[in-house]
Image (tube, rainbow, N blue to C red):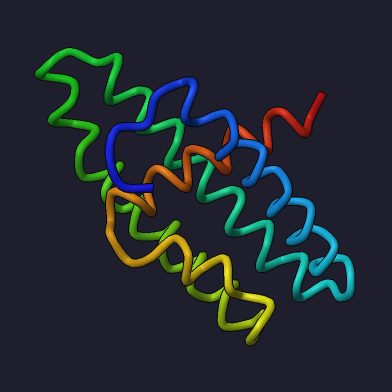
Amino acid sequence: MRGRLTFVSALPTIDGVRELLTTLQDWARRSPDRGALLEVCLRSACRYGQLRAEWFLAGTEARAGIDSVRRFAHDAFIASCNALSRAMGDPANRWRGHIGDVREDLGDFACLLEVAVTLSAR
């Protein structure tokens, strides 16, 4: 996911994330604990995406107030991804390895996951 994400380049990525979301949902249906882990991950992705959009739309002064909350939400999303990945075990968690550990890429993934969640809500 490195590099600038454009609308055209994001389309196949969004389809891939939607497929991953379906896979994760199938895995989570097998037990309430799995469902809870996935829910935490999805909620934290959506929360981070919201804050990232608010930051983008805010003025310079307002951005300063959002920064620490956004950073905390980003950390929470990364932690929830890691917990979900560990719970899935190998080889089911290959998706996590593909994302990598670059903070920017993980943030982009959170936003793509938020898009997949909102598109699935139709």
